[in-house]
Amino acid sequence: RESEGGEVEGWREERGRKRRRRGEEKGRRRRRGGGGGGRKREEEEEEEEEEEEEEEEVEEEGEKDGMRGCGGEQRKCDAIECDTEREALTQKYRKEKEREREREKSKGEIFRKAKEKVCKRKRERREAYGKVLVRKRVNESKLLRK
Image (cartoon, rainbow, N blue to C red):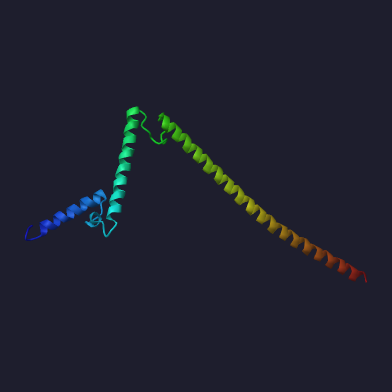
C-alpha cells in the first residue's frame, strides 16, 4: 500500500467499474450469505448453473444435428423444430386474435343494447309528448267550438 493512498483508491474504483460492467453486486455481502440463507442461496446458484449447462448442451446437440433452432422467428429456416415452433406461434397468434374479436363483439353487443334502451326511452318520451300536444289541440278545438 502506498502512503498517499491515491493509487489504492484508483485500483478500487477500477475494480468496481469492472464489477458493474459484468453486472455483479458490489461488496462481499453476497459471498457471506448475509445471515442464515447462505446454503439456500448456494443451492439456487448451483441449480441455475446446471440449468444453463443443460441449455448449452441442448444447443450444442442441435448444432451437431444441423438443426440449430431459431425458435421459429425466421421464415427461411427450415429446421424441423423451427417449423413446429412457427406453427405453434401462428396458432397462438390466431387464438389471441379470435379472443380479441370475441371481446370486441361482446363489447359492441353491450353498447348496442345500452343504446337501444336509451333510444327506447327517448322514443317513449317523444311519443308521450306528442300525445300531450294532441290532447292540448283537441282540448283547444273543443274550447273553440263552444
